[in-house]
Image 1 (tube, rainbow, N blue to C red):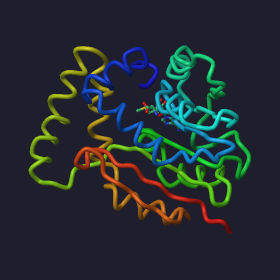
Image 2 (image 1 turned 45 degrees about the horizontal axis):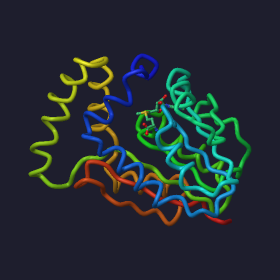
Image 3 (image 1 turned 30 degrees about the horizontal axis):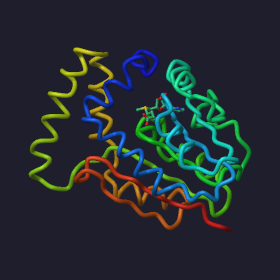
Image 4 (image 1 turned 45 degrees about the vertical axis):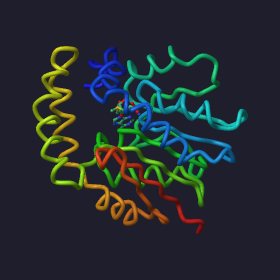
Length: 221
Ligand SMILES: C[S@@+](CC[C@H](N)C(=O)[O-])C[C@H]1O[C@@H](n2cnc3c(N)ncnc32)[C@H](O)[C@@H]1O
């Protein structure tokens, strides 16, 4: 599915979110990157917008890896990359080709919802983080406010797939709304992270709860 929409992915993201996605990624980087990391993995990096934002903020000598299992998405990321030194790797988040405890920070924007198994993916993310390392997840969620849901749900279920159908593949955006509706809300997601062995799990809502950032850590022992 992501191979089919790769060429139009960035355009649709910016258009359908009125460019809010750019601000959400920036907030994620500000919340996640301390400048003290030696190695950072952006998992499910897609066309690389979050990875490249990380490269702009991180220390110059840090190792940054952008990993995704969809070749056409990765190729667009590589085309956008003008000498940041990011390593682009084709890899499955369910079985990462990295040693245990390698990364100080792992980020993931709008990817976790798409993984085959939420808990399996979280266990694999925890494995590649060093003890004390941090994970930052940017994901869609559902707004708490009933009033907002009154606007948001019809937009998401009816308007968005129709707009997407004009510019890209409608089924991908039908999938988007069903995957968001079926994904745990942000409190449930925080509890799942704790069950998968993460500590100091905290989350903040973005744009009235349309999206959220979760930050969590691998315990030191
Ligand atoms: C909605 S896009 C998000 C891309 C990017 N992070 C962004 O912020 O725009 C989801 C990405 O997750 C990737 N993905 C889904 N499941 C994956 C998996 N098991 N392993 C690696 N990448 C995966 C897809 O290939 C796709 O590029």
